[in-house]
Length: 319
Length: 319
Image (cartoon, rainbow over all chains, first blue to last red; front, side):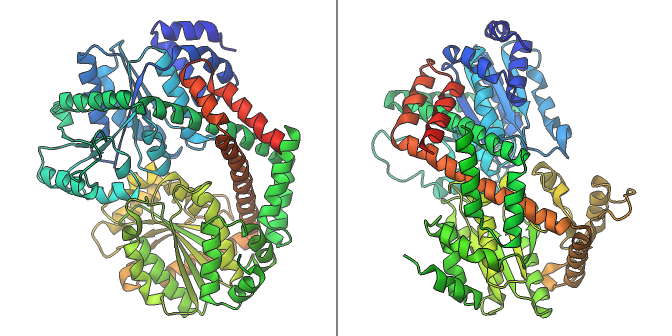
């Protein structure tokens, strides 16, 4: 058993090992998580959470790393959560690009953590908000949530940030890929990275057109900016930070920040509750009730809805 | 209200409009779905369900269409479910590649249906198995489930088929992308499409190596074959059908087919049950209980786990 109060105290003091340990408890869905979250609750709510997403190859890791540098220059403490739903098959190797973050590995004002919780009950949607909570409580001013893939769950995670940044790069046809994955519409700020390459202006124009960014808006509405960067050389990063700060200020003024955070908390709670109920269903699996229902379905003597009724009844009875 | 018994009777007679109507009831999460599924239950269990997945650009639509042709030549009735989690933003345009299936549009032995249920409660994992059930009951001998994206939910859907086909193409670096998405390990049969291009043999070798297909296996274990195709010209499709039939026969002999179907039914029931419980949580959202909890969390006066306990208690009380 972990001594949670001591661990939380150490994390609050900014000790990296304590922070890492707490996130491991989240990833491992530790039975002590409940105790951890109760202890963290009064310490949270300060971090500004920025989601970064985009198709593979647009330079997300490099951009994240450059953004960390920019925030560090401004004296902010930064947490990075790199969310990777890569398979157990491919495992750690694909996290290799994390080494680019090595620049910041020795900086005590930066926490970096990769999460790959594919297959976990409730998955990333469950674990990511709680890991953000740990980084928040540990005193991070900014938490960057970088999603590696472009699937639905990554889009959901990115869209739950205070501010969502969508990255593109010229000439990858990634506009289409991003649109397919449902990424494009979630951006509060857009970045065309690798802007020194041919086609950067065309990509920005295409994006502007696809999103109708040039169209009239109600006064006071947010008009997502498109920032051009060359993250590998740190170019455009100050402009990106400025765009983020503008969005944050706009949200603050309009009460949007509070709304988004309450919505995020509601989803977090809902996910934990659904996971708990799902686990109860899993317990029914243990007593072979589900298998027996499934066998009757494949025989055609029972339909899945009636079977589901039985499961739900089992869960609520056991409540 | 829909006259369900008549609709089911018509679908069973093979009337395409009745089939389409039933799938629409699934997609729309109709309150009558329960009645539909009860009526379909005794009619299901005959279709052989084949999942096709792979990175964008490998030629999934073309391969699916060519596979339909091959099965039609063998006199089989074929259902196609193209699962596309594309966003509301991009919408119908991205389903444009469906027009390639136009070859089969006038063939009464083929049902083609695209599903794009992003944002739906329970999502594709909920809707796809029930749509398969409709096609099965309508007399399809084979149901091809083509997933357009490569996210986790698509991989889950593809992996729930009787047989999962993973498609690759030469020189796209898509081995890495597929591995990231967790696609690679789910294949029962692998296809290297566009095999007339340079690098097809290298792709097959790489795949063979990554998956350890050349390694010794226990006698009687399934060794996933790699089939080379040029789907656009219909080349290699008979070999693909042969590989599928071999896998089916192997599953039948070893009792694996029944196991997989029971597992699929169990997941289907579980998903319906979880969705039902999630809806009850949604009802709590309606009475603003969840919002009130979320507000307290953002204030730091409540932690998400204790909030989730309250939600779960609310759900099980109301049971």
